Image: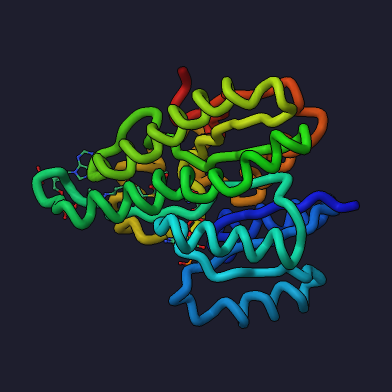
Length: 246
Ligand code: CAA
Ligand code: NAP
């Protein structure tokens, strides 16, 4: 039977590429969208035209109860989740001087609390069944820090702390937990950066002189989800065109 892969934020730039890659590999792909997202039906229809029949469920990943209800519905209607990709995320970029508590909280809740909220209802099932994959999409800016991103860099760095601790706890149960830290990928999140900042401050820092492609990150997700990657856990894999090496 096909494994079930749950990708949060699958209708965004990276998420869509991950959904497509996982579906092409034969996974039963399920995704989530924000409850207020009015374009979800259109996205599902467009994907179906391209030959991908995804299931999508409304879920505010920042909200614990919403996440529990969403996963319960998925398990009930589709089956247990074998692969969880914690991909949904937001930015609220501004200098620390200008940052208010609301901007801090929104980013922490959506990028970091969400990892707890979504992993909690799937993890025991994975360990009970003796197989599972949790893949957390962090960022190069969680590794190196970024101007205007004290909130985002903190949340993304926190994701990897979670990865390492949980990886230790579930390693003996056939479950791996890993972090992927992409550099700048050409999605709407990056296109929201002022063009002048992108050209003068960001691209020059990337030795490959280009943005990454969502498909390049999706390929790495697929590898981490595979049986071949069974010995790989607690890692933070950078995919950033050489922007940050450590
Ligand atoms: N490095 C160094 N200095 C910078 C800088 C940078 N990256 N960005 C801005 N500055 C400087 C400016 O040159 C300016 O200096 P002066 O006062 O001496 O002129 C000062 O900081 C203030 O700049 P702004 O007037 O632009 O300040 P602002 O408050 O309007 O905006 C900002 C600041 C929000 C950080 C804006 O510059 C910005 O959006 N930067 C891009 C942030 C970024 O890279 N976000 C990544 C989003 S994509 C993502 O997050 C995906 C991922 O994981 C990789
Ligand atoms: P994107 O196109 O803006 O997509 C973000 C996705 O997150 C959307 O599908 C959005 O769903 C979902 N989302 C946001 N808040 C949510 C919430 N509260 N509940 C449920 N879903 C929510 O961004 P992206 O570039 O694909 O980024 C995907 C992930 O990769 C993020 O975690 C981001 O931090 C990380 N990342 C991106 C880059 C990059 O360069 N693009 C680099 C490193 C890391 P709705 O549209 O339905 O709200």
